[in-house]
Amino acid sequence: MKGEAEKIISKARKEDRDFLLEPEAKRLCALYGLPVTRFEVAKSEDEAVEAARRIGFPIVLKVVSPQVLHKSDVGGVILNLRDEEGIRKAYRRIHENVKAKVPGVVIEGILVQEMAPSSTEVIVGAIKDPTFGPTIMFGLGGIFVEILRDVSFRLVPIERVDAEEMIGEIKAYKILEGARGMPKADKEALIEILLKTSDMLMDIPEIKELDLNPIMVYEKGAKIVDARVILEGAKG
Image 1 (cartoon, rainbow, N blue to C red):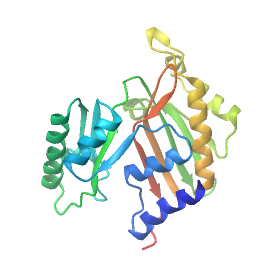
Image 2: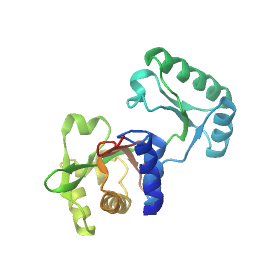
Image 3: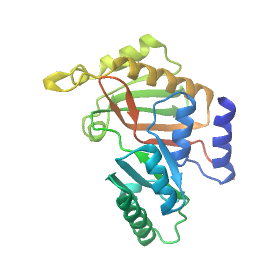
Image 4: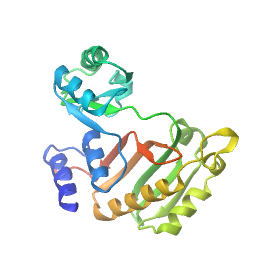
């Protein structure tokens, strides 16, 4: 597991990147048993269609490029694709959008990803403090993390009791409990995500920042929809 993780980090280093591309970040998470959405990287329309068939509709397409960190800002994400024709049109449109907005862009492929059903969104994040080391964060995800700033923190490594406390500390905890008709969140799935993320942070000191946001949490299970990993300065 750690050896495979080092290969992913090493590739970014060789390319003088201080971040992982989304498929790299998701592969890293998957190595630690984190429940990322199913995905494949396609290099052509035909490959995108074949990947969508294997994964199952509906599908999300996202650009994979070292020049594009904020994919939505440049038209690099298209959601809720429900048939092969939609995949082909969206594949071409993403290429057109990104090339128009990012001159000289290098597109390494298109991420073909299952579209996780909507649900309560949470975030698990981390930042490496120069004094104390990695700190893990939990809170409501999506737009709520920016608006409400309702999050809890712990230094890693954490144990089960820490994960339970982090979940219970946020002001919006009642939402996770199923307030006002919302589905009750699978607390055990969230605990596992926090513990496995802690393990990953301890194993890979090169991680400077981590964002798993949004994580869709269901009555049973959870899905990490997007993953972002920033590394300590690249060694070019």
